Length: 85
Image (cartoon, rainbow, N blue to C red; front, side):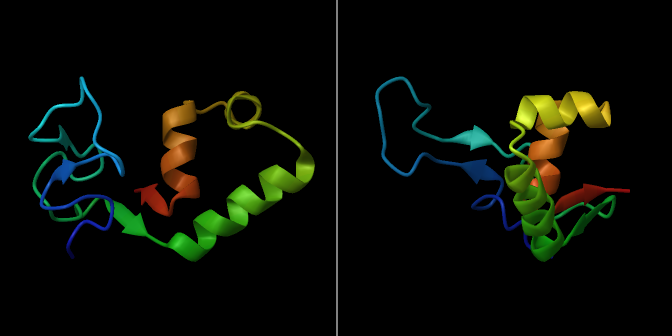
């Protein structure tokens, strides 16, 4: 499956700005391959549910990651629908 997080393994800002690499950043999900790795399940609906529950509880991403004892970057991935196996 093509990685829904990037464009051919690279990420670009919505608005180009000084200091951002012209060639983009390597995608942290597919690690620059452009293909979703086998060790990741993509379920954006589940991620939206998780984020909605966190918002309703009034917790920040950092607070929720501490509560769940996981890194905030992993929680962010999960809330965007990327679940590592």
